[in-house]
Length: 178
Image (cartoon, rainbow, N blue to C red; front, side, top):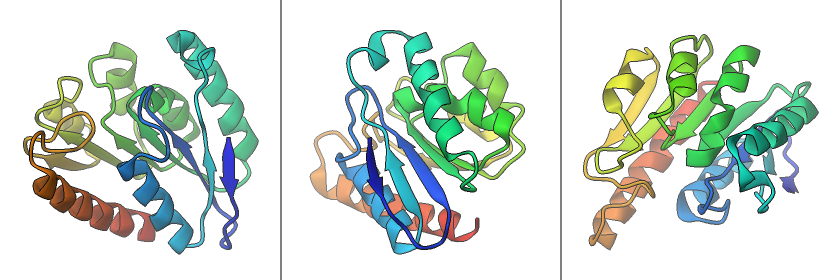
């Protein structure tokens, strides 16, 4: 894990994807938004043991969430990190779910029980995204036409940069509202 100290007494946990580290563009910029707004940021870096099974991911997530429970947390999960969704919903913490894995029944059920402020982000070219399920949650949804699982437009780097800019603006407003 990597920890960045903030100034506002709150901590955000970044849970990356299996192959999408905290240094990839979307999570890097989410961290910058959070730090700019005074949040401390705890970045999780998965190792091979963590990714061995869903149960291993969930076990690691529980440990991390327990460690920040008294810091008025926000959870940001990308893809594999969205396996934390049931734990976060149970704790009633705000969250940002980037390309959540919306083909898993336990995550769909958890989304129906969200009671805290939540932002769901996905692209229509991502086979793991389901915009209908996201919208049915009643939470804020930022759906990106033609974006893939990396939240990029395949074959169009300039369009991908525009998407990233819109996403950063959306996340900035979301975090400001907490």
